[in-house]
Amino acid sequence: MNRRKFIKSTALALGSIPLSNLMSCTKGKLPFKISLAEWSLHRTLYSGNLDHLDFASVAKNNFNLDAVEYVNSFFFDKAKNKTYLGEMKTRASDLGVKSLLIMCDNEGDLGDPDNMKRKIAIENHHKWVEAAKYLGCHSIRVNARSEGSYEDQINLASEGLRKLTEFGEELGISIIVENHGGLSSDGKWLSAVMRKVDHPLCGTLPDFGNFKIKDNQWYDRYLGVKELMPYAKAVSAKSHDFDSNGNEIHTDYYKMMDIIIKENYSGYVGIEYEGQSSNEMEGIRLTKILLEKIQALKMKNESKV
Image (tube, rainbow, N blue to C red; front, side, top):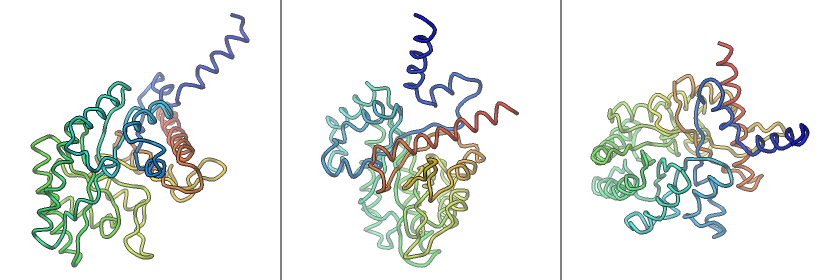
């Protein structure tokens, strides 16, 4: 092979390797890892153009990502179906893809002021804890919706979360809360809930974008993430729109990732594209490129120290 052909073939080979893999071969380790949240593909899934069982394959084969975050909406009636869960597990395992967590919605409010409704909501989540255990996940993501005064909602949500976490503890599964509307999008409030639950298996999943409390009332996203990071067991890199330089226009990813890394978090950061300006595959790709740029920058800065 002559030099020109060698250079060309090497460039092509390197071009096919993701930036994260290249950096792992260099000195030091990645400051964080990247996963794919299934919600990034919600339009494709709801349209029937993608089957939930093929999600792990898309993550691996289209984006070379080795970890996924499921959404229960896309296999809502399969939580207790061991045949179906077994197929999910096998497909992910065959691809070398880790199943990190299940995002759970539409199972009732864990902070419902009605004692019976709160009890039912807690019990409704049990099957997802069991499914997460079977799939090899570390957590289920839940919501902390409640009603009443600020303090009442802290008490109600923490009670429901504590009981669910105690169930999760039996199976070694964490219960993590996302800022997802209402007072859960108030970083100070959700931090207070975490302190009141006071359990090592109950934590948070800070989302870059979900800081709308109600109507036009928004919580500062950077302050919110900073307040939630001490309890974080996962992170959602929410993205919507990008400028011509590949930067997300609603969130300063460099500033946000600085906050996350300074909290000594080195786990997975899940891509969660929710925009309309790009198709979902392109939105995922742009988010991944941006996160990889930050990985490279952090590693370069570390090497100078």
